[in-house]
Image (cartoon, rainbow, N blue to C red; front, side, top):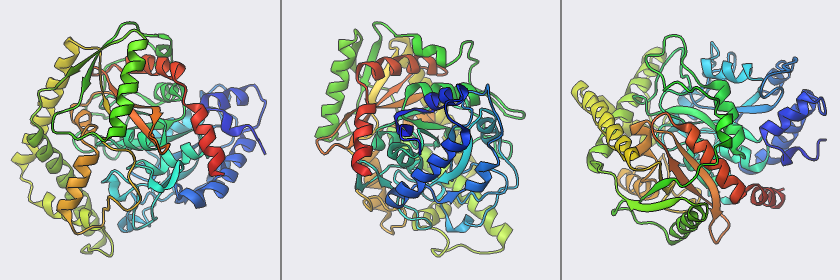
Amino acid sequence: MFKEYKNFDATGLAELLNKKEIKPSELLDEAIFQTEILDPLINAIPQKHFELAKQQLESKLGKPFHGVPFLLKDLHASLKGTITSDGSRLNEKNIAKFTDTLTQRCLDSGLVIFGKTNSPEFGLTVTTEPVLHGPTRNPWNLDYSAGGSSGGAAAAVAAGIIPMAQATDGGGSIRIPASCCGLVGLKPTRARTPRGPAVFEGWAGQSIAHCVSVSVRDSALLLDATAGAEVGSPYHAPYQENSFVSALELNPKSLKIAYIVPDFVALDPEVNAVMKKTINLLEGLGHKIENQTINLPFEEMMNTIANIISSSMANKIDEVEKEMNITVDNSLLENVSLQMQKNGRDVLAKDYIQAVKTNHKIGYEVEKMFADYDVLLSPVLAKPPVKIGEINLNTTDFKDYQEKLMAYTPFTGIFNQSGHPSISLPLYRSDKNLPIGSMFTAAFGNESLLFGLAKQLEDAEPWLGAIKEMRTNLS
């Protein structure tokens, strides 16, 4: 037993390993032990690869995360010989024939992968409650959702099974669970991390992979280890001259920050209170905050998201139907997924092209903001975390589902469409002690500024103490 395990972030564990104060096998044993104790409570890790992880324990000294336990997301991620179900009964026996580029970069960084975390079906929603694996629960309160679609990752990290886990974000799926579970969640710039070699982009470039973590420095160090173009990638994010870890020392001064909440968004009073605290904290650090709007065609944006995601889903599901010689129904797919397949088949080529053009227009409008402002600020979510069952991907009331989705998550998807880097920080909590994230967005390619500001805020308003207290209550 390593009793101090939960006191360390991933960087701290790597430092202990490199000093030989603990062995990689001991860390893996601790992660497995925590999984066996905590996962029955939160249901975060449906795919467990313990024996495979033990084969990864050969010496990786000198690697940034030498011997640190890690979890992939059970969505898209391919680790040869293991199942990637995408949270769907349709793919529950889908065994990867290769290891994808990002997973290999994680392994090359020294991480030891011992399982995959729960995801809603095909990552399609903002909670994690797939029919296949059941709901992932929020460690802060087990009656509440851990968010989605990287809910399993966020719950596992918040509970203390590991300090950092892979997450992906096509419409908020890193930042939303980070907000719900009180973690750091960076969505990098479009194409900052690799997606290939089988498929090089998701949802017309809206989807990007990185992590959720307890510390800012873990996020920066992992991005240093995994970022960069891969062979065959059609485009890539701007080149970074300096490391992301070096950006932690920026300590930015007198930033001009635009606070953006559209008039049509109804903010929950507790979210509004958290944002006022965040603004006061920023002003106390010497930054200037102004209320502002972005000139965006919101109705057109919603049609764009629907066309891109539904046509992508139709393509994906139709391919599986053809390969398996079946016709899917609710015994294999949840109802919203089936509806999206149906909708996607009706999207014309010209509609898809127009959707991509709209995303580029959104990127232009967002980027123009950075001529006048250094950073954009908004809540991650319009409400505190919702209860389990409140947003249901298997519903047949599609209008109710869409209305709940829009009322809960009106902010995050904008920056998937625009491609800008955006981060959720766990500065404050609700009256019920549920985390409420604050979201910061920077110019295209400027994750460094976000890391510098995030580290400044982490030092000014540390959140690890609240996480440790929650973990004590959970166990």
